[in-house]
Length: 374
Image 1 (tube, rainbow, N blue to C red):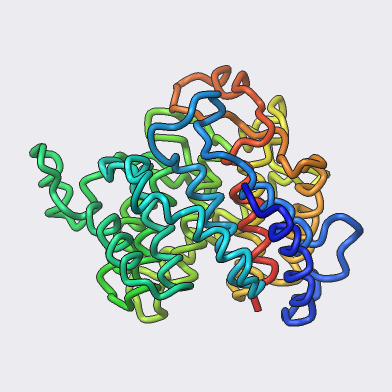
Image 2: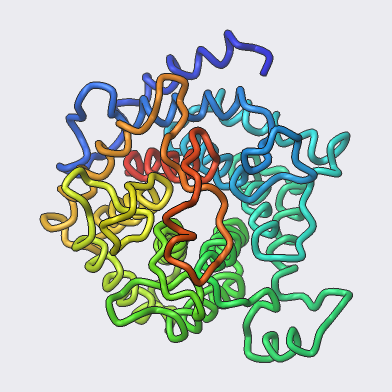
């Protein structure tokens, strides 16, 4: 990035806002180096300095990846909740070329992963009120419920059930679908977006949530993969954060979320982290899933979905543990590489541990803004 002096000013601008945030009693008086304001600023600045990423490959991406979208979204929300107009402006400037000279980097909305791109223009619309962003974001959200040109009979069956044609019963989907639909509802107030996301979530819950509250990666892959469960935890969290109280599916989703959080409480390590395979002590502490669970804990405590005395200390412990995995450059360590499903325990245990991967940067940014929400 150019304008390094301007980026440096982010620290000054953010620090001015320190006293404006209402704090839960477990979410204040942070040890040195663990303040969510400091961490969020550090990771946001680092994101701005990082070229568009390609899942760890050295070559540029053919389109913006879903993991970068999630980090970009986290930085935008952090800027919004810290009232940091300079940071918001710089993040918006990064997006602007995607409308014009770099339009080829816009993903095609033909799968749940690229569709999450729409959360960015929707967030930018809510911050900048540019109708171009609203139209773009709504288009991406609507494509999940619009029959594609190369239609299959299976797609029609799904749409007739009120489900997106992109349904595949992988736990990853329940962030990729629900967050863009929740964002579309936040931006427009149109209940169709949030109601269809809630219905989609209940079908997934009925199909793949296990009796212990956790989720297999897919019905044919009986392993509790950390980041996969993290996508579900974060997806339910984002959905519940936007879902109106009178939505008929809300009680079911809230109960499923609370069951999952109760199970995660049992599997949290003494350090405060969660493992690559949540219930497998032979696996390693993994940061992306841990950060997603932490985001869910923090948000649940702040919204009263979780008992403050029971989960507040655990959320605090998890956040402090996560900050120890951030190096001086602002890169999060011990991030599981991008992972397909595989019916093999060893496959998950052998996944590479990456430093600086956007899968890890993103949920740490989510935690930063969640801790600062009034």
